[in-house]
Image (cartoon, rainbow, N blue to C red; front, side, top):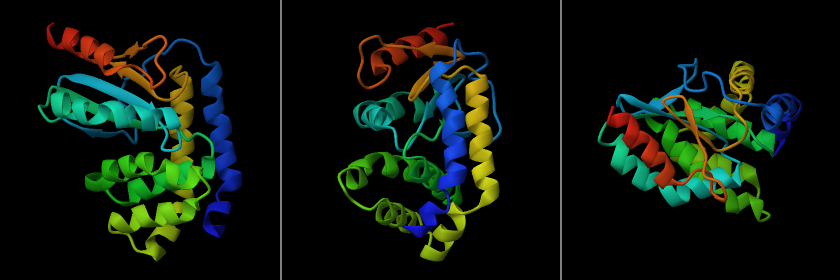
Length: 209
């Protein structure tokens, strides 16, 4: 796991930046276009998700709602879905995961992100995150040497830090956070983030305008 340890100091900085999200207040321009945005769909309504591949609530949301959300809104081009990265502990794993997703290219980015979310139990229950990261990276067409180079890329790590700072400045308060045309969607009492019903209500209201 040496390649993950090399990220620890830098990833700790990224985590410190992201930790500021927990004390942030109201969101400002959280849906405005940002450098590094990864998106799918071309709809007039923009849905932005701030999430981490090591966030268990993010994984629960994607397990419960992603397939239906994508089929109903993204595949029909009613929504432009934007995913924004915020590393959460363990930061070295999150940073490495995001690096691999970007190295896989735009066409496979979301496949890698979803695979990482779905694989959390592998390493959270005593497994080696290195094995999971390499397995998913290999599945996206990267060889082991490319993965090693990718996760150590200093420029990529700096960009992750910059995106975390931008989220902090926008007032994002945690992961997962969802915004529909700039309005944050909250479902009080939900254990899996905003419910699809609440997100759908906001999207449908925008589509009706």
